[in-house]
Image (tube, rainbow, N blue to C red; front, side):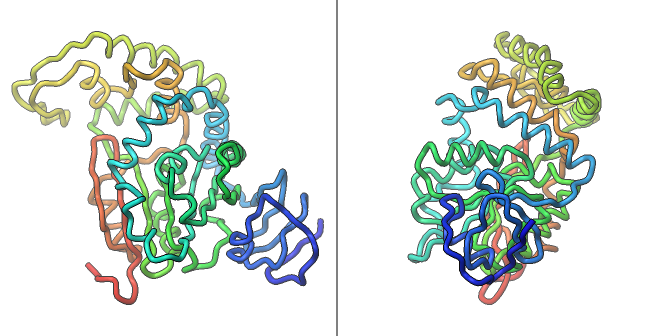
Length: 357
């Protein structure tokens, strides 16, 4: 296998799959041919089916997680309905703000945005809809979901680059990226803290990291989630998908009850607050995740449950931990949203002119 390295002599060849800004970022003077290996910033990749793919060896847990998500994002019918996408877009904008109003898209120059763990590209396509012409976008993912993302961007006529590689083996130089977007990804690595610290090294001073991670739940929910996840661990993705169907049915049955109860005082020992609460929400937040939303189909609700339970790597963290990790990584938090489900952060890389906390 022939290998080309950064700044090899130009050769007349074209590759529509690799936009010029991506070649410049990787330090390549020309696009590789199909099947050709390259070395970019110390990382080896090979061009297969128009996508650069790394050969970094993943841990057993990360390999399992990659396989699960590769399967999940192939189930396009379970996440592409207008209702499902509208729900996702609304939730993303509530947490991150509207990118059309973001300061990092001002100033004329097109920022380089890397989607670290893009999956099928759903979150980026919904959050950045209407502003892709103001940025350079590269989607990266450890799993084969990156092929689905490439196809979905192509269907919308959006120019973008894609790389299949482990988050810790991305072929980018330190301090080279303007924005990193990592929606619901860091907790699926071997260590949320290490993944966050690594991505921070890739940002330019003043660059921004936008991310969402799971939040720790109460004791019963934490136990039940880990119990179900352990049961699914030995199953192939298709069997795990089927095994969770009764759980999805349970969530729907609870949701259709439409019943509310009043807890007159908090159950502190179980971290359950006082007040009125829908029975399905009580079960969902404090016993076992069994998603329900009336305007979604069974498959869409099942997709959400599978996304939670199937991957072996699915760490939960506290707001205090996330704040400490950001500080240790040299990130100043600009926007923070704490929900029962998770923690959303927009943080800026400290450097000249950036206030330290």
